[in-house]
Length: 96
Image 1 (tube, rainbow, N blue to C red):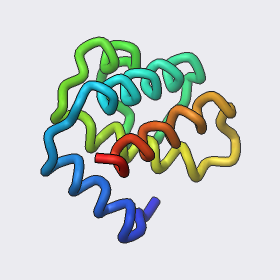
Image 2: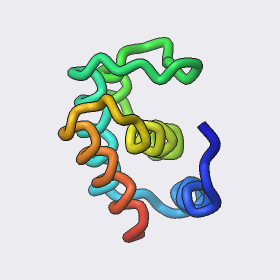
Image 3: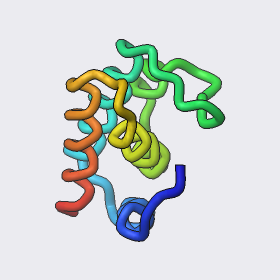
Image 4: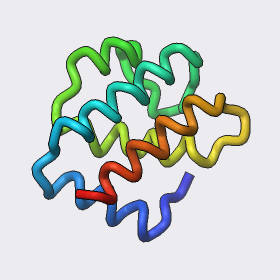
């Protein structure tokens, strides 16, 4: 999936800005939803489970989780809870 210019700007923003706890919490919620939904993002599949990622997430992980959120947002076959979690994360980063 090719990201648009606005998506790339948000990813750059979260790489450059200080990440606060609300964004980290939104990342954790998204990863937990992804673990429950057993979603497969193809080549971006991590070596560890999404729940393991959620338990040890750091600010450096936020850009990768944001990329996952953009992919989830575009998928037609994901649960509403997962889409909501992806949208929450995107909005939290837009608000930085």
